Length: 203
Image (cartoon, rainbow, N blue to C red):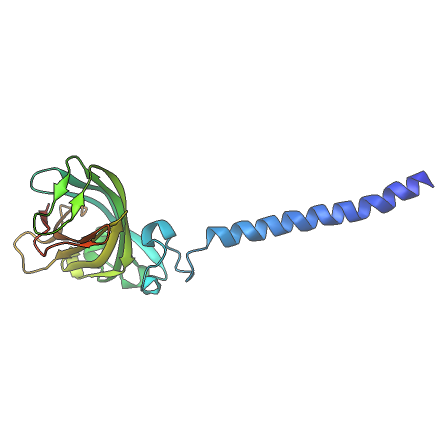
């Protein structure tokens, strides 16, 4: 009788153990794909609250670039640019970004070595290292030109990137697109609206 009881009691224990294990797997999968739109681009790239993340439903890494201010006090590094895989034109050059035009999202780091102040407003960027995320998907033209990302956030800093094709040194340059020549505009810092001249050209 005792043997029968052990067998009887072991069945629900095994059942519940398997059920909880399956539930754990399902919850893990949901957590790993919590970017909302099933875009495949992690929330680290977009940030929670991105307005048009669905523009990149099948992401591909186009290039990783860096750029810095003229003074060298503000440096963007490990800036990973993602695009929509269906926008890549087949080409034997191997430079993916040169064969692409369409929506882009950028994620990376901004390092500020000295406090940066906008004398026309209350905007002050404190020294430190900030994670940069896209909050409004941008666009890039063919061959790495016409790069525009309208809203990017780095902590309480809101900025935009513009690199028009008609500028002398605009867009992604070098063979693998490892540098971006662009104008970075700091729009807001911790709620303060900055002047239109804050910040400047980066390369």
